[in-house]
Length: 97
Image (cartoon, rainbow, N blue to C red):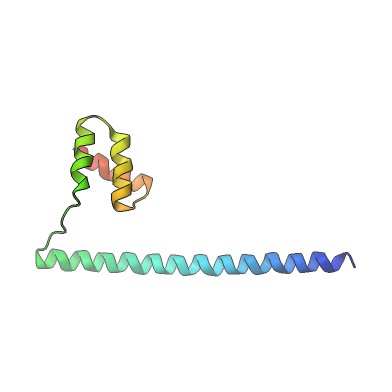
């Protein structure tokens, strides 16, 4: 009788693991497709000579950099763009040049 609950638990754990793997695969596929679409959009905009308008808060980032507040500038960049920490840090450092 003791082995029945262990088997049920093992099957539940296996089921959860399979669902997590399938979800992760789907997420990676969608991420790749999104990146591909973004590249195409960028190429179309460049070909048409259209520049994406800059968010008004980018001026806030520039002001923070002038004040020497790099960390706050990175935080604002992340809020504005939704980027990750490393990407925001690189972008802010590019704006510093």
